Image (cartoon, rainbow, N blue to C red; front, side, top):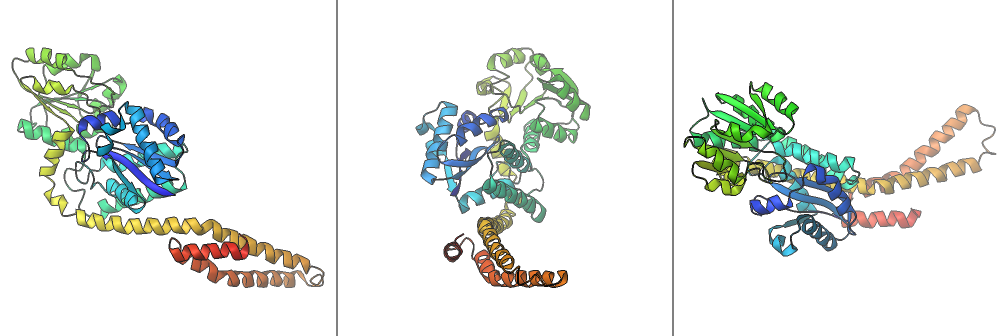
Length: 419
């Protein structure tokens, strides 16, 4: 069985395609059912963020699993495979492991070293685990990925300065506006992305912060943290007439601000310009709104370019992170191999103990005159003998696990002891 990852990200595909293939949290269970119902997949985790959509799977047959996952993408997006096949990347076994470890470490993100991705990796794994579709192989893989991500941030400087999409969104807006001091800002959304943007705004001395969200209670809660003002999402257009900046990052499946809305808003703004930063995937703001005079519309593509200009210092840390990734790939391989032979070793111990116990029972008549202390000594002696006899085979199989020699030793144990 192979570990495979098939997906696309901000580097391999245009934003429009990332939107088409993104998977919302409330679509995960349906996606799990779909993927697990296919012939060549025995475990699965789906990781979908504003930067990527990836399927991690344990494949019974590699080429069959590739076809299964490509068909899944095609059917959920209603796109023919040739529309996106060239944008997909495919990794398997050690390369798939290394890819996930790089993702968790933040070196595969639009914002180098971003902190949010590690939580997203954990959430994707947790969703699959709770649905029962992440088994022993992927559970072990994602546990190692979380460890790798933590090591990268603790042992290198990859997480210095701007390390999240939400931080970068606010910094990019400040760059375009020449600072945010005294500005009026509206944030749309109440999830992790919106919360991160609000936290960044607290340090910027803005004049006023408005928070709009479909769930009023959540908007009230977030607004209170930044001394802001919650507003109903229905009042969005009216509020846009008085703000300088709109930051949006919801999980909506369709646009919540369209071209016509913004045209009317600009007419009421007395020619004051409006900067919009939309980091949602799918996008919250109609892309054509960027053509309205007075509107500056920035999205994930713009954020990637902005983040690239400020990453030179952290670029020097990438080599150190790659060393950690390589180390953890080896550790994962050793751990997986050891766990792979564990059932065989356990079976050997059970078989040896069964033989020992059977022989002691057959000698029960000869041992009947022994005192309880003497019988206990016989038990201890026979257990030590058995342990010594199977010690070397056990150690040899463990040490060679995952190698051709290990496979030969494991096969020999099975043949010799009928395991």
